[in-house]
Image 1 (tube, rainbow, N blue to C red):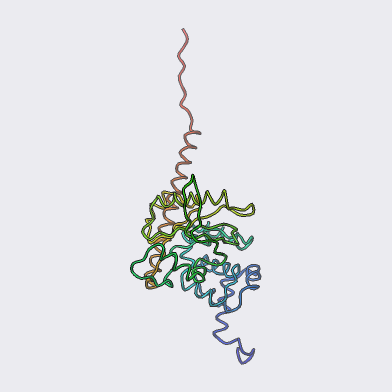
Image 2 (cartoon, rainbow, N blue to C red):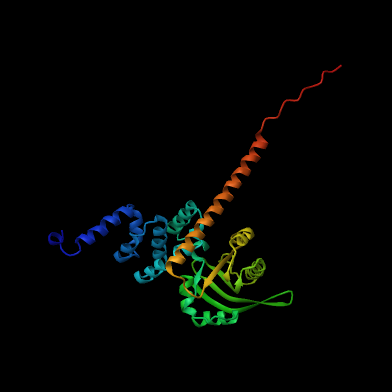
Amino acid sequence: MEARYGAGFGEKSLRHMLRFVQVFPDDAIVSALRRQLSWSHFKRLIYIDDPLKRDFYAEMCRVEGWSTRVMADKIDGMLYERTALSKKPEEVIRRELAALHEKGELTPSLVFQDPYMLDFLELKDTYSEKDLESSLLREIERFLLELGAGFAFVERQKRIVVDGDDYYIDLLFFHRRMRRLVAIELKLGDFKPADSGQVELYLRWLDRHERQPTEGAPLGIILCAGKKRETVEYLDLDSRGIHVAEYLTELPPREVLQERLHRAIAAARDRLALAAAARDEGGAAKIGTRGGSKSPTSKKPRH
């Protein structure tokens, strides 16, 4: 083929082309992607077996304008598995990716991650929350890359006053595409339920005093050294705009991280499936109670 049609039609190139046709059969999708993605992008994407993961990287690359090197780093760093989106049921993932493709609608679950990789800080064995905060600001460019495209740094130790008491938001960012303020609270230890109350206070204050008319409701990230997933689940923090995520200052071996993330995804989806089943059973029980036939009552004869 190469001798007949020239360079670019060798055996390896033809295999890439066949694979491309298999995984991207929709011309409309390809047309939308090829404006921002090069053939080098597509060659990396077509060998991702999971269609949802592949669509995630393709759409995020299109929306955020990743270079081939940045996209490769995101894939190697298992960005998809670390997003809040990956822990949701498949039909929800498809719906959010479709909204991103059709409307450019970027949701918090596409943006927020767990865990965040902060190995570039090179922190020593013992450090304080202030040390962590200072290190993040010294390496703000790399921290912004880890947070994802669209984040802009606003302020450190943002002072707010409630009932005459001073409170300080560790780090305040603004996400340009979501048009929302994002408050980040740093915790050295494990997440505790009281932490969510603290961040919720911050978000309510920001919503009242800092939010502009064109912006969405502020969001919060509690960045902690560890968390107990059942505790986070019971608090239903997503509905309150709060995301709890761990941070890693030392990267584990890739196989260990991969196994850990896959377990977290499976556990999250199992919990959501059980919750949905419980809701369905509860709804069916209520319908049965309302619609059940009443047993006839015998009337006493009148004397």
